[in-house]
Length: 102
Length: 174
Image (cartoon, rainbow over all chains, first blue to last red; front, top):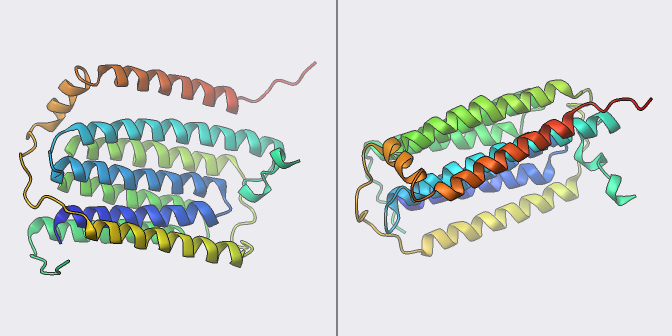
C-alpha cells in the first residue's frame, strides 16, 4: 500500500465522520464544524495528490488555499445566520429551524 | 493490496498524525459539552496541519493553523458564547435517524475504500516539488492564478460584509 492510498483512506474516514456528525447532531455550531471537517478532508486529498499524483505540482496546494478561503467565508456567514436565527427563535437546534416549512 | 508496510520515518509520522486526527474527530462527537467538541475538532485541525508538513506543504500547513485553529475555531467558540446551550447533555436520541446516517456513512466509506484499493496509483513521483514552496506558491498565485485570486478576494469581502449585515442587531422601528 503506497502512501497516496493511505492519505486518501484517511481523508475518506475523516469525510465520513464529518458527514455523520453533520447528519446527526442537533447543535447548529457542531453541524458547521462538521462541514469544516469534511472540507478539510478534501484539502488533504488535494495536497496528497500535489505530492504523489501522476504529475506532482503546486496546483493542488493552491487549490487547497482557495478551498480554505471559501471555508472561512462559509463559516463566517454560517455563524452570522446562526446568531440572527438565535435572536428570533432563542434556540440553536437545527431541528427547530422550521420557518420555511410553515 | 499488500500489507508489507515499510516503517519509514514518513510512514511513522503519517500514522501518528492520522491516529491523532481520527481520535480528535471521533471524540468530538462523543463529548456532551459544545466547547469540548469545538476544542477536539481544533485538535484534529492541528493534526491535519502536521500531515501537510509531512506532505512537503509547509505554507498550506501554516495557513491551516492560522485559519482553522486561529480563526474558524475561535469564531465558533464566539458563536457558542453568544448563544445559550442550557439543554446540553439531555440530547434526545433519534435512533432511526442515527442508524440510517451511520449505515449511509459506512456504505460511503466502504465504497470509497474499495475505489481507492482498485485505483492504479503511480509508485514513484515523476518529479520532485520545488523545495521553496512558499515562494513558488506566491509566484504562481500572482501570475497563473491571478484572476481566481482576485475573485476569491472579492467573494471574501462580499461574504464578510454580508455576515456583518446579517448579524447586526436591527434597530427598533419608531
